[in-house]
Image: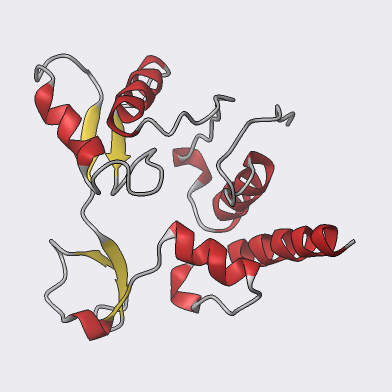
Length: 173
């Protein structure tokens, strides 16, 4: 697969590394007859709600029927509110899109449920929950600190650890 040089905000994981992570998940954990992986080489604009709407239109035009919108989709820093990218879908006419938007609440690993959960699905207290954002994941990886095993599959963490080790070596050489 060929990747264009796509601009990312500082610290973002490049497309080729993300694709390796997805490929290893498809190879080892997903039913192959039910998974299609597709990428489109578009630079992030970090435009929050409007970019979430653009992503929905593009996915819809490629045939997707559903799209998850999480906290701070396509946001940068604290410029947008944590769920602003979800709110835009309530502001447009109900029939404006064919794709179904699935707004996702805060997610975490629950030690008592022994699975991923959200504020809507888990009755347990905060001390039973492992919250780990992309920002905190990248920070742990950059510092060479261990990532809790509950956060990701070991094969994915191996790919990410390898990437960050190479990145560190490049910065020191």
